Length: 336
Image (cartoon, rainbow, N blue to C red; front, side, top):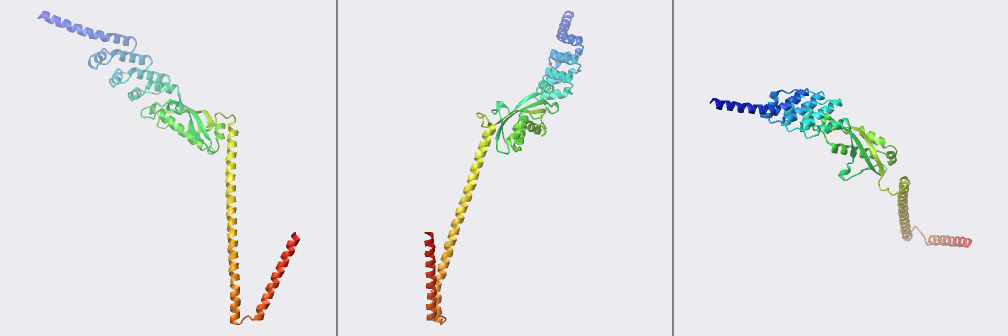
């Protein structure tokens, strides 16, 4: 029994020594780097929680050397939540060096949300440029139309930096591109002439920038720059302005011709109407003349008109007709 007990004790001591030796290197490395970790904590990581000891040790050493004190329990909890411990620690170090306020809880939440926290901090320190529209989506230019009907093709570049406070739940780059594109099209549409856009493209970018397009997004817009502005459909034309003015003059000419043709048609219609009215008046005159014989006959029957009176009236009418014929003959002779 003493021999068996001795062997058992040796086995236990050997196993315990092996466990101690497995974490001893991490303990020595942490102690020597000034990032002390308790031996019991290392044994708990190794035996109970199945957490990589060297990973947690290296993460704590990096943070400590950068002047950031992070408890190993937080690092373990983030690893057990399937987070990227090294990435979070490096992001905290970068944020601290850049004087950006970022806590471990906030960085861990961003990392667990699926965002690259290190890239977010880098973008916050060194803003990046986004093309609007995104050429990878199949469109290289924004299509906008000014009030004068001239179609413009515009390309913009948006400089953004990460808004760490809204990184979790904030809208992505696609939302920024869509909002900026909408703002540029709206701003161009409010311009009286396309010339205003070509002369002062900065007015467009300034107007869009003042619209607060980065609200509820994961980014803060630093600047919006108009990279390229061109008139659509005039790539092979040397003088775009001259061509547009010529086309506009031709359009005005056709419009005036159409208006003149409309007035001419109206005048013809009025002339036809007047002729119809003349014919109507002549018909009324003939109708009235047809009533004269009836009136004369009625006057005979009533005794209001005698035979001699009728003859006198006929003589007067004959004299009048003769005078009219003579006067017409004289006028024709004079004309000849």
